[in-house]
Image (cartoon, rainbow, N blue to C red; front, side):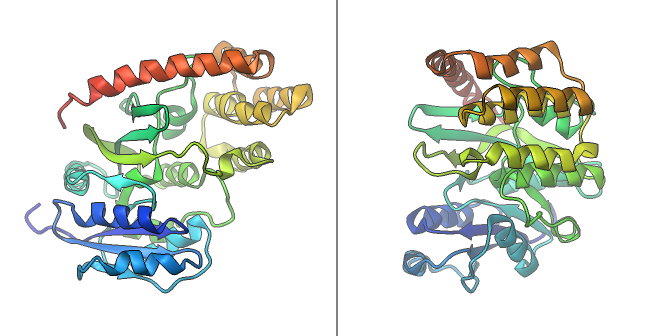
Length: 323
């Protein structure tokens, strides 16, 4: 861009000071020079200040610590931002050096007035490393269909993760993250953004972020009762997705969590009835839903391992692609 607009990187931080410092350094290492980095301490953390004290860079701002949820912290960072664009980075993730440069170029080239730009990422955990998503949205494909509709037994291949989001600050002020949600905050936001006329685009094919998935870290998405929160959320936002996406989300995402919690046939029946009442389930959705409750856990683990192996092959291929 001839006159590079300021981009504000917003990093909520809570109880992971060393990881947060790595995230900050990856943001400050961007090839895009017109940048500020805003750290939003979201819980009392006496070690965070010490970790960040060694980073002497005038582009770094650290807000006063407050006890906040993830969405509250992101919204606070947006309000404090001075940039025309905002990019989010979770405190345990990292960016590749050209992430902002490539996303800013994609935003400039977009026909949309207020585009939302995502990117592919490398997902890393104890079993290895994958490149996600396997595919980007097809032209004209609704974001709900892209994210939720199942295309195979092992998923639909779509993903938009918080640390990949790059969006106009104006849009984020108009549509803040919902602070009443504990789960699906990023999914909820991209659905509402599309309704407001801002569709998600992807910046090339190169993975531009690192998503660090620690297997033993407690997560709200797997906490007791999470599936009921997910069910309540998608019911509330039914008008944001197609009947096919609604049914697929219930019978694949929500169903998996209900089965993991040992919900039994009562949960199976409740989700099936809701999917038929408010959506349009496919045969594949029905098969996956039944498999969650019928297949032995050992078999499901083996299938997951096999799918992970396929993902590693995808990751090796994707690493050779050019932006």
